[in-house]
Length: 265
Image (tube, rainbow, N blue to C red; front, side, top):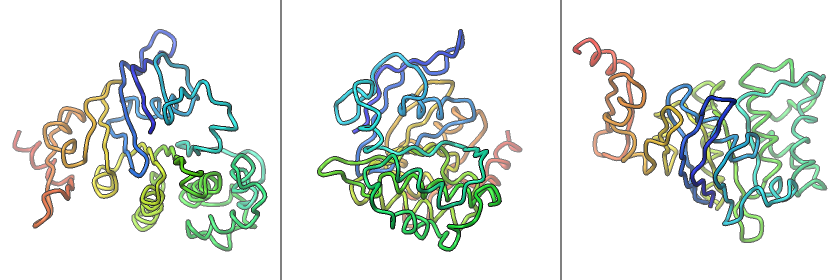
């Protein structure tokens, strides 16, 4: 379990996060959603130790500040929102970076397996900087998967911490990547993902944390959190959540419905 308690983050005199309490369980996909500037990425970066914070963040009961870097690298892999690589690395060299910091450094077959998993077999010799944004995103996901290839390390879960993992992808690849994420959780690992797409969040998340203005509005199952009232308040615009016929738990949002509601208002 990842447990965040009473987290505050300041950048200079500006408070970014205020009194955040957040829990993510292994075996689940936990999505962090909210409007731009709500603090989603900052919360994830606090959980990875990239930004200073006050409060406590515990992984399986142990404060992450007490864990050695190599211990954290064996247990959790991080996909940032964007990564710029200045050197002319090949795709295979980028993916191998994940192999070097994980516990499977001796298994040189894993980068090839990971690239196949994200649909990029045959790209090993291509230069990373010559790829499209969506292809680069999938290469970075392959790097992350190589680092924690198995969702369980002994009896302990491993974790994927993903910042907008489908932001640069077309619809088909979005579904493919979210399927990979879902499979990792189903096999016992934990996933925490910052998401912008509320429809994909509804489809794949087990738990949703809704944020606004650096605060956690609420956390719970998608059917509980993704409703008209919560989303309208969080996003400061009228939002209507629809359900599929015959399945009241399947939520989806159409921009057309939002526009109609705004026109009536």
